Length: 367
Image 1 (cartoon, rainbow, N blue to C red):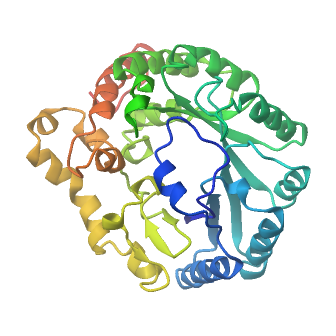
Image 2: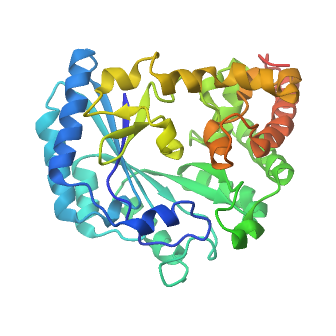
């Protein structure tokens, strides 16, 4: 089971496409040691009852490394105390890598914490609180992790600043053995950001070119998540593997937990109306129960949406895409609205990759 725990809403960057700015400006909270203890003890009790010794704790924010080193030490001490062997606890963090101390590098190594970072390969989108580029500093910290033999994965947000560099970015990742995935910028939180939004056809065609290169590249085992996801759905019809699709794992194999105990199917669905419940007040049994009203609402979304939307009902790809991930629709203000960006991307990628794999002699599971 994967638990995503939000440590803080503080951040040391002011990324120009950030959708969390308004929420983060309201308060500057850091999860207390007592709250972390409560969360971990609640998780341990549930896992023990479920007879499941495999636990993954993923720490996120805001910016996870805005939490002081001394607090990290206390958090990790609690993990060690509450999840003794034979628990197979795996730890991970998501960070922008803007602030990284030598002590924190040592702590990451000591506790074998998996690191996921963000880097856009340009000087314009991820800026500090004074509007200056963060790229040189983050790149330097990436190198420090590599020098310390710490593996990490990267998320690269694709905007109009770097959309035509996707193949170059792919080549860099592969040549340096870095697992990664692209995250397309498909909406703007503010009016002035609209110039950053990419054209879905442009993105789909570029991504297809990169995936084709990935498919034919037998020299690397580096995980290119977009390539793996789309390849999986074409070859295996593994609907739950594709990104931006609400699948079997969402809210079942992982949940996102805020400091107050409120739980969500994923960090991107952090809307009060779609809260699964509170892990302290309601318990994790209720959170994960398929009869949970919010769980049921998400599960029923696909069948209800296709009845309401004739274009989806008639589309031969609808059983793959599930009308796109609900969080994209929620951000547009309608739980049942078709995810237009995802739809346009998938209508290009699915047939192109199906044709590619058939030309390579593979049997495909979709039309």
